[in-house]
Image (cartoon, rainbow, N blue to C red; front, side):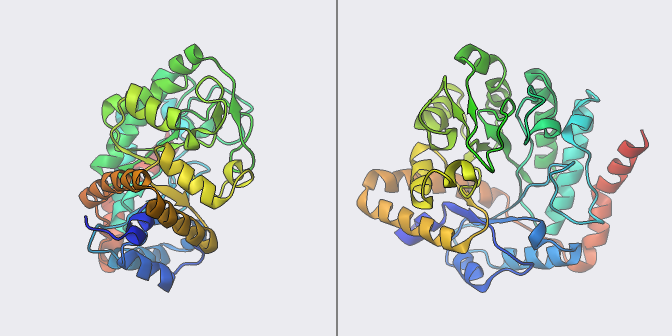
Length: 358
């Protein structure tokens, strides 16, 4: 694509906002190819009707260059964004404990079809973290299992289902957030395990995901002493590029976790984290709430592209990777009058009811 530096820098950003309507400025940015997409939260989705209307407006704002990512954290259990009567899957621990990969695939498929009908093309799921620490305040029952083999088998089946349902899965949080006692939303966690332990436990599901060809992963704002004791994985070239793309062979799109989380924002400016994450190897940056921070990050990325040809090349590589994925999965909300039937046909409600009855 022939993008200006302003467009190139903007395509690195997937952003959130307040309210149930697409802000006019953001709609214009999407249309001008100055944003790579949006991520939606409960605050944006007060009802299914409002959600569908918002998603239609996002899809209508697509640029000529590429359709946007339209993402959501819809995992099941305590991490869900869509309101009733959208059916809620149980926690992935509950699903994974059944030991039935076909069930996990069916659950992902039903969820993917329902999300696609509304107009999403990306779900930040499945969790690939291994639930090894009962004191972990942020993962816990979001993980499919407490063994790396169990996580890999069930999570990748779920991801296959999402893909078959028409939605891009994004595995998280590389290289593993399962054995932390700190929530990276509020502080910077550190994992002190040696490399042998990381290889056998934390990294194993991600290695399987890379071999499986998973289309997208999300980085963790976690420091790993045995991998890079200086900076969190999101900002580490040794982790996000050398390990993930080199040693593990990942060829998909790497999203940063939200750059507004205190693990990063409590230690550096948004300008530093945005440029640093792209340099490290992230292809898409999530900035999930504040427009001012999004604008500051955009300006910093433009400046870096202007002053560093190497950074501009890295940005072009990242944007080419993400636009190829988005173009293969454009958001296509179904017509409003067809939404109830589409949600019913997805089979999600029937599957949730069957799980509850067992």
